[in-house]
Amino acid sequence: MARIASLGLATQDIYLIDRDDFVGADIAGSSIFSHLVIGSQVDIDRVHFAVGGGGTNSATTFARYGHESILISSISRDISGEAVTSCLDRENIASSYLEFDRSGTACSVILLDAKTTQHTTLSFRGTKRRFSQLSPDSLLAISPDWLYASSLGGDMRTLLRFFEQAHLVGAKVMFNPGLDEMAEIPKLIGLLDDVDVLLVNKQEAAKIVPGVLLTELLVRLARYCPTVIITDGEMGAIATDHSAIYRLSVYEQVKARDGTGVGDAFGSGFLASLASGDSFEEALQFASANAASVIRSYGPKAGILNGTEPLHPMPIQTVTDIKLD
Image (cartoon, rainbow, N blue to C red; front, side, top):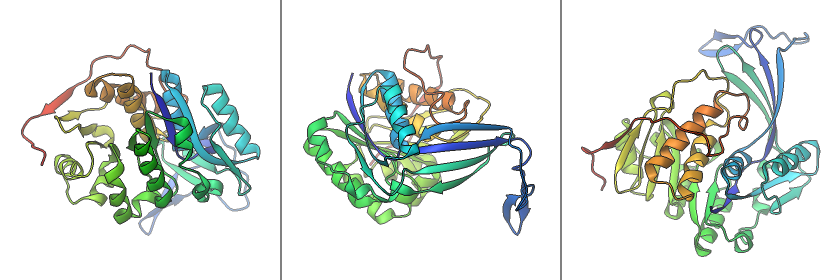
C-alpha cells in the first residue's frame, strides 16, 4: 500500500433534513424557501452530524482502503475541531500535521430537502481562510507517494508551494479543485504544470478550456496534465492516461439521498485503487462504485467503501476515434 497525504478542508457539517419545509418557490428566476417564515418555529424531520471537507473525505477513503493516510489541514481548538480530530482517530488518519489557529474550525449547516436532495448551505468559513500557515516542508517529513489536493478556499499560492514541494520529494500530485479555485482560472492553469492527475466535472472543465463535448474538453485539458478525468453526473465520466481514452457510465443507478462529498468519493476512490497497483480501468471502476455508495447516505463519509467489497462489472469503453495531441 501507499502513503498518501491529503491536503484540504476539515469542517463540521450539521444536516437539517426535512421533507416539506424546504420546498422551493420560483420568484424572479430564483428559487427560495416558501415555507420558512421569519420568527416562526420549524420542526425538522431529522438532524445528522458529520465531519466533512475535501481533506477529511479523501483521507477517509485512503485509510479505509488500507493506505497510510495523513491529513494536512487547519482547524481550531473548539467543539467543531474536536469533532474533526475524533473522526480522524476513528478512521486511523494521522493528524500530526494539523495546524491550529484561533479563527474557528469551519462549520456548515446544510438545509436538505429529503424529497429532491436539493440543499442550501450556510457556511462559517473559519480556518478556510488561513491555509497560508500550512508548511509544504511537512512533506519532507511525511515523504508521501501521493499528494491528493482538494480545495484550499482559493489559496493558489499555498497550493503551488505544496505541488512544487511534492515533486521535489518524489511524490505525484492529484488535484480536485473547488469553487474558489475555479474562480481563479489563469492561476489554476498555471498550477497544472505540477499536476499529474486532474479531476474536474464537465462544467469546471468548460471554464478551463473551450468546448462543449466531453471528448473535446478532455483532449484540450490533456495538453496540461498526463492524466485527466472529467465527471458528468448521471452521464458518467471520461478519462485519459495518455495511452487511451475511456468512457464510462455510472456504476449503478441508485436513489440519491445527498450529493455532498460525491466528487471527493470519486477522486479519492480512483487514487486509492490506482495507488494499490490496480489498472487504470479498475481504478475508474472503484471510483464510480465509491461515489455510488456515498450518494446513498447522508453525509460524505457513511458510504465510503474499504476496497474489499465485491464489485459487479460496469461498462468502460475505449474511445478509438479521438486522438490526443
